[in-house]
Length: 251
Image: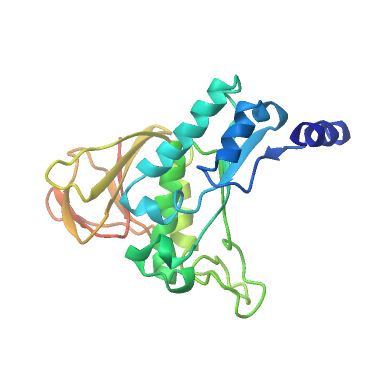
């Protein structure tokens, strides 16, 4: 079916982008059976729905999403289609049973929860090598009473919501920069410290997986920016971080 659809679409418009296999979870056997049979040859990118991998699980760092994408990439490589892009075409709030730690009533996040989550998810997507991420409900509300309240980026009257700003800040700082590593901190295991390099400089993105802690600053720190894009003045060679990400800009 995928092969026939791909040929038909390309016959009608050779420049069309065909995204195949969307709708499955990142661990569904069906997805990997399709890849094994050569599904990657009949689309321009493959997709999965990253509930539980691309959003709330990223508060502890990008490792889970990295592992998910690595497994899909290994399956593509084994099938002889190693260069196919991988997209997450749907992720967002999910049922509380999947995220009991966060107590998301009805699967919805508060505006501040979503504002904190967006930049962490963007960082994880870049670290994992995803080509695209589509946030379910990450758009303007169109009906009063729409669900996923924390995820919407604009309200019915086009008022920009809180989540837009940290999403824009993360995108502006990480676009064009490649993920290098998670910097280890033996004395602060709850500190998430991600290094991205490119565009003539380095960005370290820091937050605390839980609580609040003091993070050391590199000696060549040029600037510190909050998740809202505001400058932060440190005290000495440390900075206090909590669940709100901060960015340390380096040469």
